[in-house]
Every structure is written in structure tokens, then in C-alpha cells.
Image 1 (cartoon, rainbow, N blue to C red):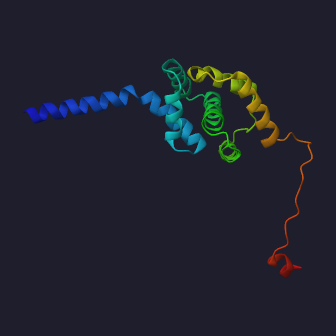
Image 2 (image 1 turned 45 degrees about the vertical axis):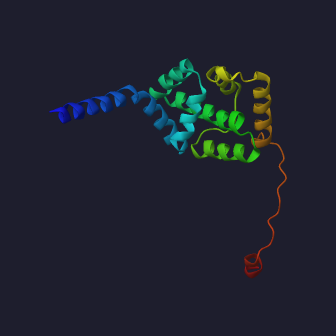
Image 3 (image 1 turned 135 degrees about the horizontal axis):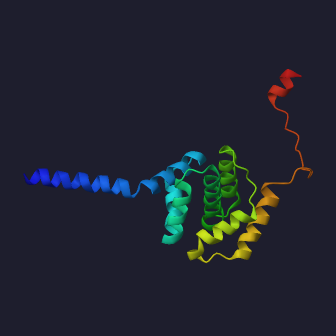
Length: 163
């Protein structure tokens, strides 16, 4: 009889946990599926936010609005490129992640404003974040019409065989 009571308590605990965390899991899964990344990247970001901001973030992204999910993707980008690791290799990696998800890689002021709100407990410097945005857009997203230096590919053995 006690085994049945223990089993029922375990089942109730598991079901209760799944129900209480369903919005969080849904938000994390939505963003990770869009960006094709592991959920741990979003979970680590949520741990850095304050409890109030985390709840607002989860509420806005779990509703499934495509625009809100895209805004959340920019927050993941800013978190991993500005807060965690601002190296050029990492920025390029996360930029390619945005492009792979068919999200414009251009960082707008509204995205940095959202980051300042959601990461308020980290006391981000608004000026540094604006400088990061300008630097990123200038170096990683040149405007159409700017002349890029195009390097000629080095001739390969195949090139000589074809010619």
C-alpha cells in the first residue's frame, strides 16, 4: 500500500512539474528550433535575466508570435556575442546562426533596447552596447553599395586541368 502512495506522489510531482514549466519549455523549444541550437544556450541566457524579466520573456515568446520569437532570437544573439564572448569568431558564428534561421543579421536599436531591458540586472552599459551594435553592423553587415575587396581565387590543379 505504501508503494502505491509513493508511486502516486511521484506521478503527481512529475505531472505538476511538467504543467508548471510548460511555458518555459515551450519558449525555449520555439527559439532553439528556430535557431537550430541546443536549448542550453537559451537556458543559460534565462538564468542571467532577473526573475521578472524572465517571466516576461517566457510569456511573450511562448505565445508563438513569429515577431516576438524573432526578437527573442536577437536577444540570444546579443547575449552570446556581447555579454558572453565578443570575439569576432563567436560573432561570426552567431551571425551565421541568424542567417541560417532566415533572420536578418542587421542589429537595430530596438534590439539593443530590448537587451537593456531584459538584462537590466546585469547593469549593461548602454553606450558600450550601442558601440557594439555600430561596430557589428559596420564590420559584419556592410551596406549594399559599399565596395568590398574581392580576392581572386588562387588557381588550383583543377583550374589548370580544365584550361
